[in-house]
Image (spheres, rainbow, N blue to C red):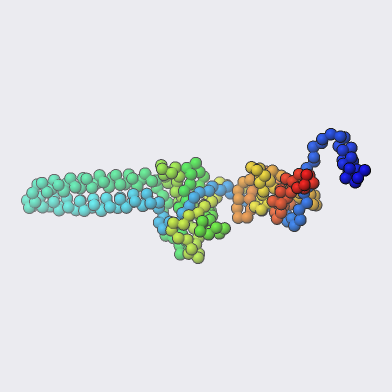
Length: 292
């Protein structure tokens, strides 16, 4: 009997001649690195699309305020002309029809002011607009309306611009939403963002993350430790020296190079960082490697 045949006979005898479910295999991958799961105080975050703007108000609010200022200026002029016409009428210098025309112009301009004020009021009341610092820039974030009640003034925020991928700009909420845009169903949130190198330009777009809610303790692992098997997020935990077991995890808040695991990994556990993807690939291979 050849050696291969002998090995096959031994394997069949061990299996009782039938099929048996394989226990989980422990893949061996060189160059693995691990890190400890830590705990830290974190906030929940809400995400929004953002854009650098040269003005502290959205365009629709700016236009409404400009229309109000124009209406108020025209009303002041009309009121002044009415007073002049009334003085001339008392001195029998101007005809009656000029006085009536001045009164009509004044009434019309007053109505225009009332309409313009109502338009501005429809955008709510925003926080006072303190001037920007020398190293600051305005960013307007568009927040989905379901998240409006969660954002507070002065909440910490982080912005990653499309023009500078991988770079984070710190900031804070300068004004909470005062209205919802009926077209986009989003609410503008004004942010004051640090820009010490003056690289942000009006029109630049990016992703905004704003802290919300109360601070809480969370378990964090390096983002590199999280791999995906289909739709399932996994973290390989070192349960014994050289033994790495995949743990399905529920992910929470991501911050910098770390991510919260809401369940699946206890604090202090050693998780695989470098080589986690290779472990997943090796675990997917059939027994005996790539060869059948």
